[in-house]
Image: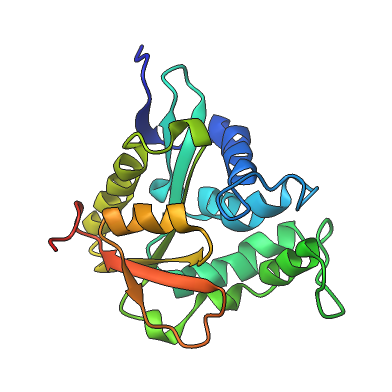
Length: 211
């Protein structure tokens, strides 16, 4: 058995560990537990639907003992994923997370609004980057090359599906994440009105882009 971290495909038994990583990195790259007391809220928006709807594009960083300490998830086709989120995933959540009936004010209400508007993921300016992704690593696994390995695993899987390019949306305030994405070849995409978010994209061919 390996004793150092390595990347492998997601398995259903990793679900709780993936949820934990999502929660502990869910607020501008840091722990979100004080911001979102429901510890399944963020994972049910940003991790679980990908695990359920496109498990072939889900990879984890195994700590060498079977525990997932990081993950990357994505979709090859954002418009198609949005439809599946609306039709297949959201009905499983509505009893626990009803749609807001008033303008959201609290962090939780704002996340519920995101959950119930999956169409926000379809951005016309990103049509030539049809795939999108989410990647997270526990703090102890960051800055050790594991993020790049996870990214290359997903890029290779997307490239094998003939997907030309991938994008992501990140909080502009998360400077460490931006530095990582720059290192692995992502470049800023012009999306007017993106507010406090930044969109980045790159081709799916694995490896960093030349300068």
